[in-house]
Image (cartoon, rainbow, N blue to C red):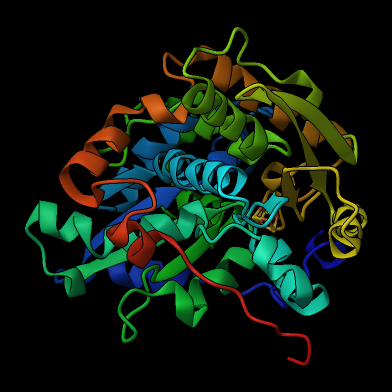
Amino acid sequence: QCASVCPVGAITEKDDTDLVWHALTDPKKHVIVQVAPAVRVSLGEEVNQAIGTIVTGKMVTAMKILGFDQVFDTDFTADLTIIEEGNELIQRVTNGGILPMMTSCCPGWISYAEQRYPDILDHISSCKSPQQMFGALAKSYYPQKAGLDPKDVFVVSVMPCTAKKYEAKREEMSVDENSPDIDVVLTTRELGKMIKQMGINFENLKETPFDSPFGITTGAAAIFGATGGVMEAAIRTVYEVVNKKPLESLDFKELRGLEGIKEAEVNLGGSMVKVAVAHTLSMAKVLCDQVREGTSPYAFIEIMTCPGGCIGGGGQPYGTTNKVRQERIDSTYRLDASMTLRKSHENPEVIALYKDFLKEPLGELSHHLLHTHYSDRKNK
Ligand code: SF4
């Protein structure tokens, strides 16, 4: 499945479950885990649930049984990404910065851009992905708040993605050069394997909420898992911040679904701004060529490597067809619609994080922990 889409050398799958079992049995380690948005609508397929079943609460319970000390939600740092990335976009638009801005949460796309389009790297948002924003906080803010030595905190990610294993190993992704921010990345399939190895009867599990302080999330974060989701989440926040009034409808249906390239227009401060979304690298190429030639009509572009976005990622349960992708996408938007909070800037835990720790979006600490840079890797 991954071989056709995975551009970053993560094609040969590496099983890291032993590393996690080892950490979980080490009494000196405080082992925490984050789970990506797309995992909760696909893990069920690994444990005999119908395709598209939303398994969030049971998944958290299963991970508690596996022995994780705290189970956190990557959706929290997806919300944080929207605050940082949204403000970066506003800054670029208002200060005559480089446009279009392009999203940065997909390591497959980043690797492709570094190898094939090194001349347009300035267009890519400097925001780290939600996985890496979580890692940076997990080794700084979290130990401080929990009274732990950062060296004792072992951070595991569960991702729909094989390329995330590579992303976590990039040296610019670690705040401390001697220790990675994310210690191990597991795929959805690997988490399914651990649940089966433990003999957990998933069907009969009770539901457990995520732990605090990275547990409250919004519908905007939930849709990160589907192609178009990051863009829709960003528009919900950028529109309200710039126009200082609530959006009439939060649903940007023109950005949803499996069409190759999707577009929308948004009124920002009285000017109509065009945005675009592409999934798969062949569609990304169309938009990248326009950017390279200086003919792109867009202000903001979302690119995801995998067909359908992360719900169709290389670490997801095998047998992904377009029908399966659509079922996972439908569940993703159902989840969004069911949530009380649907805009990232209304997440109270994110607001508290800025108040207590980061102070302001794009501030000094945010730049140090949450932003990164890219390099020309054409000949690498
Ligand atoms: Fe990974 Fe998602 Fe990018 Fe696929 S689209 S490579 S699953 S981050």
